[in-house]
Image (cartoon, rainbow, N blue to C red; front, side):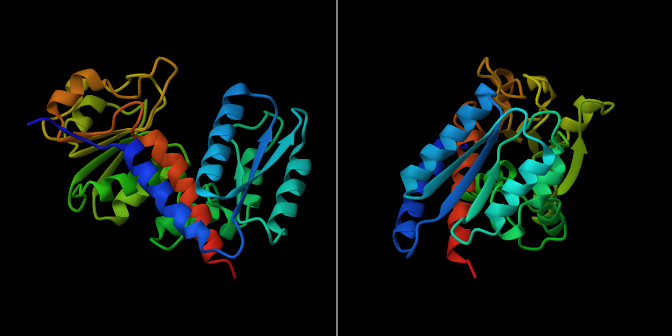
Length: 275
């Protein structure tokens, strides 16, 4: 039997259609403020994709461009203004920011209600305690994808390869909250192939092209590739892994579209629950 394709592009389209209906019922359009500091072309592309998604669902995107030489104090002041602007529903600070800026301090300046990209320590702490908060968009999108395709998580052995604060760590917490037994690994983990061979659910989030080899993956595993690289490969050697999988996310078209769809959904939810 062919493995199940976890089609993030298809689900993202369905979510956007649902969001368009929800936005049409709101008295005021949700406003997502997108902050881009500097002139990194990849970051500019990502912001443009998110702005386009806002347009598709009927939301407003407020674009804020700051120069490369922006200081931490200046960025904090910008975020504070947006926190205090009652018209703004959500705030997105595009990663990465220039080196002179304390990115973590700026992320944590975003108010919890407007942290629709799930980047604050406060939000992460609530997720770790299984309390309500907006999750980082990529792992939250993965969970939505698993739910949509009825992938059983409870009591499964899950392995997350990657420990970033907005992907690997929250991904592990979200799986744990759904009663998986979770192992967090990274590029320096010893005996990594053996650990991965035990995984019922594998999440590749290490940020290195095809770092996880296909022959490390056991038959019947659910494979989530959260990586994307210029050569249109992910973090997992999918060409070898796919014949053995129960289900997998394609690259591209799997996790990526769900990241943006989740950001849109959390922004709409923030608007719907606005005090």
